Figure 1: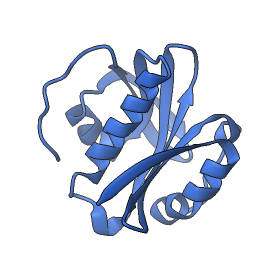
Figure 2: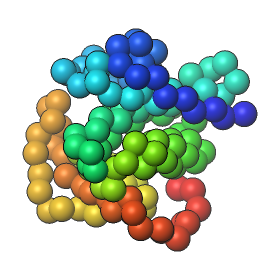
Figure 3: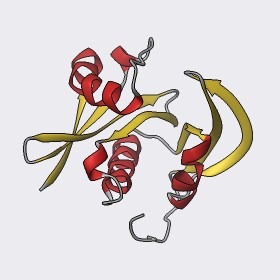
Figure 4: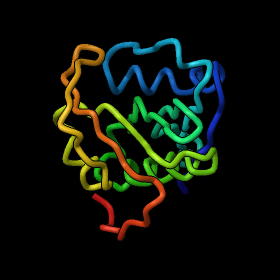
Length: 145
């Protein structure tokens, strides 16, 4: 059974750090760790997914560091994690979600209804596309990817 929980600040970062580092192959952290919500997903007692949600303004959030354990990819875990993050963001008042998608992940986020803004930037040594989603809209479910 999958269960997602959110832990705020440094404690959330501490819970998500190991899986994040394992998936990305290095430690990524910045000044937002202490002021962000950290999604931690479990299958029974095994940690299988993590992500970070930062409120940039009262209405705009930024999603970072979505990481799914290798054994759980292509099983809808990423889709469910995105949904959980967006639900949490909306509960905090967010109307827009933004993220920096590494080029190879852009199709996944487009499937999740994120729009490519056409802008790029380098983040943590990777070329990323800046993407956004209107969280006030209701989108038709496309199933899991």
